[in-house]
Each structure stands twice: as structure tokens, then as C-alpha cells.
Length: 352
Image 1 (tube, rainbow, N blue to C red):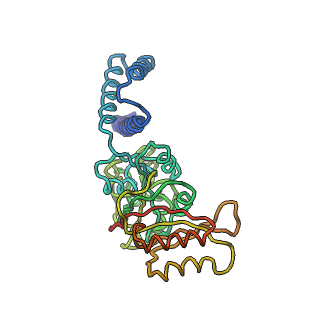
Image 2: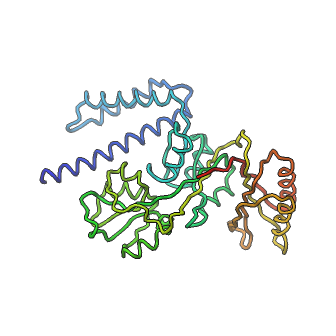
Image 3: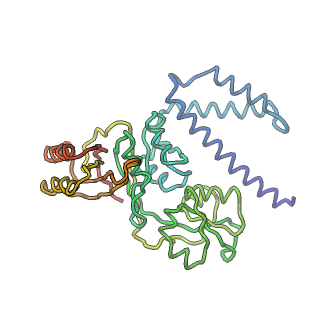
């Protein structure tokens, strides 16, 4: 290998080492939720002994044990802070990660592979909250998240609205004319269809926009680019070829924050899910109750119920607080008219 090629391999390995170290620290702060105290001497000794056994090749025992002593020290320091943990789907640099960091600047954001993993980690107490996208102004509703909201016992305790600015980025050594393939999440791709078509770029769906950016930096496939957030270019050392490739500038995603318990703060927006008897006028009856009370209905979506062909769950957002007697009375009447009813939460409406 030539020197330049060796250095590129070193850069790739450094990126993965840093990613792995960060992931290890994230797992350490999650583990604190299952420990009675920060200090655990037997566990530390077990780790150091294993590291010593596995230190081969150019890794001397002194170097490995010294390195891991520092890692363990950092882990304990983070565990002692007891910071708020917020989970999101994707990799660091995803728009959910950005929305969580804006909403709670002092929190630790932790990535998960799937939306369901975020819900599960919140339910199990590994996280204080989760943040998931529920709708985009161009692509519409995120059906998988809506289904999980209906099925889970978590509560919506807040929301965030984030303007979405998509960037085309690639490796620094890639020429623009050589780009043939673009990796990104299908939802992001749906927000920039016209751009992809005009540039005659082949789309390769990926599970996450930031995940695609990390893959590009790690695997370095020839003639490839990604569409992701501007932050990803910084995190994964990519070159932004073109900014704002979304089809419309009015591109916004709404995220909801999830927790095990209801919010203790007074909100001005309620979310519910319900099913109605399978007969004419059932849904109309529910909507009439809300309309007659002059309560503003801000969103309604329907989702099929698994195992019940022809039956649907409806998700509604409406203005008002569940502490308001009028709103409370309407929700009780809705409960009476429905075959399944879930109060998803009352929280403050967010501004972009």
C-alpha cells in the first residue's frame, strides 16, 4: 500500500474507534439505571482482567490496562452526573438527534436501530424519554410510529418541530460528476424526489439518513453520496455538494417526546387514540361531540388494527388542556362512545 492509502485506512479505523468508544459510554450511562451505586469494583476488575487476556500483537498489557482505566474513569464520571437520557432512532446526526438536543441541550442522546427499540427502552426504564417523528409536512404521517403509539402504554409529554434542510454530501475525494448512487432514508428521499430525478441519481434506501452518512465514511463506496442533515458532514467528515435539496422550502417534521408517566405540567394540546363500533355514523358521533364543544381538532389519522380486518384505530390531536373541565367532559364522552380509548397525553404545542 502507498502512504496515502495507509492513511485513509487509519482515518477509517479512527472514526470507528471513536464511534465505538462513544457507544460504550452511552451503554455505561444506561447501565447506571440498573445499579444501586456508581462504584462496582468487582466489575471493573473483571473488565481489566479480560482486557489483559485479549491484549495481543502490538497492544502491550501496560498500554491496554492504562487505556481502559481511563475509559472506566470516564464512565463512572458520566454515571455520577445522572443526566437525562433521551433515545432516538438512527445514528448521531439524525434529525431526531438534532430535535432532542434542541429540546434538552443538557441531555445525553442515545441512538437505537428501530423505533420499536426506542419505545422498549423507555418502557424498561433505560431512558428518561424517547423522541420519534410523527409527521412531516411533505411526506405525511410516520405510520410505524402511529402504530407503536396505539400499541404501547407510553405517554406523549412534549413535542418539537424542526425545519428539515437536506444536504447532498459525499467523500471529499469524490467528484460531483462521478456520483451515480445516493443513500438515504425513504422518508428523506420522498422529500426530494424532483432533485433526484433531475440529477438522474439512483436511490438506495437506507434505514437512517445519519446511518447512511456513517456508512459512506466507513465503507467509502465509489460513485456514492448520501442525503442527510448538515450536522452529518461535520460528524463523519463528508463534503457537502449541495444544500437544501428538498423539493419545497416549507419542509418541517414534528416529533413527539415519550415517557412512562404523564407530564406534570399543564399542556395546551391533547392526543387520544380510539376505535368505534363498526357501524354507520360511529366516527361522526365522536367528531360531533368535539365540534359541538367548539374544540379545535388539529389532526386526525387512521391506522388498521392488526388481526381485525376492517377495523381502524383513529389518532386525534385537539387543542386544549385535560385540566379544563370542558375538555375533560368531552374526552369522557368520547370514551363512552368508543370501543377502545387511550389518552396519549397532554402537552405544550411546540413552535418550529
